[in-house]
Amino acid sequence: MLCNSVQSLILLEPQVFEVENIHLKYIFSHYLDDRAINERDHHDRRYVEEYRNDFCEVYDHRHYHRDYEKSHHHHYSKSSGRSRKSSHKRKHKRHHCSSHQSHSKSHRRKRSRSVEDDEEGHLICESGDVLRARYEIVATLGEGAFGKVVECIDHDIRCVQMLEWFDHHGHVCIVFELLGLSTYDFIKENSFLPFHINDIRNMAYQICQSINFLHHNKLTHTDLKPENILFVESDYIVKYNAKMKRDERTLKNTDIKVVDFGSATFDDEHHSTLVSTRHYRAPEVILALGWSQPCDVWSIGCILIEYYLGFTVFQTHDSKEHLAMMERILGPLPAHMIKKSRKHYFHHNQLDWDEHSSAGRYVRRRCKPLKEFMHCQDTDHQSLFDLVRRMLEYDPAKRITLDEALQHPFFDPLKK
Image (cartoon, rainbow, N blue to C red):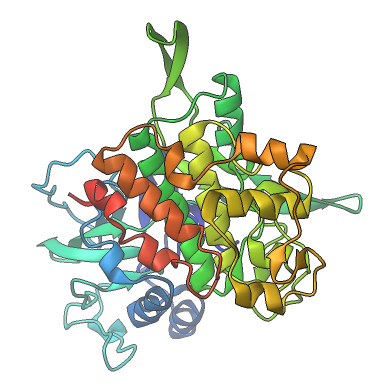
């Protein structure tokens, strides 16, 4: 599984974890012989320098230093004695990790030029070090006789966790964590009412983080849609909307996870000509121009508009009609993409489309320029539509990346 799971963590020293009421124990004897110590070093230790390098390939640290709303803070304890509680009173989940050091200094190890134990056997670590490509050290909170306590940001990636798999009489069974409703099912059960813009912001940021993790690992999801984005918990409260004269469901928790990696494709793997569910399919896929990570970004743009409106704007099952909808909403397709495509959708470098046909009238009636879908003109709405417009850039080479999207002003309120 691509996404780091708390259950599979192997940290630097023997640990006892308490993570959301899950207790994981890694207990090793203090009296291991030299051979056992060497085996443990080889198999069970993961060096901070490796984590730092892995993390730098996956993340740009600028995305996370100020993100205390969406990244969880934790105590990472390396002490067998009493650990001091942080004076930082936050509402984020905290992980307490306790370890026991060997009493013998002969077990002190130097693991690389930049990562080593000190004379007391404590790991020498600094702010910015990353453990397991996930736990970023923020500060040292305290030290004891046998270890130290550091505060960490948990860069938990919002992907569904595979717990195990097994073969059942020739059938592969995969066990996943149990999640809530999909975002599509929630909208459907809420009479296709749109999400509130603050909920969209929270969900969009998590989606971008999750898919950005895949992109930095040279993967493209290829099938992003509201059905494949699930709430961790889909509990809600019901309020009566006097203006609309109906009940509305409001989410209690907007935490989400991305699922369905069955079509996910590495850069060096065979790329099928046709990918993505129709309504979320990028123009380069429709035109058979080849695709890569930017096609996921297009899909996210379509998803965000659907969250905002309560319905998909590209409601069609025909490729030429789909392109006509794009042009109605986003303007003409670029000439260089039209010329490069071998699809017979064009005549004299223009979409061969009859606006006066029944299909043409359907497109004209259903679609309008993107900004005309805005409910109001305040800063939040304008900022969201600016982000969506950048995600729905025709040319994949010019389309916003998720690294860039995570820095968009629409997400600024999450970083305060």
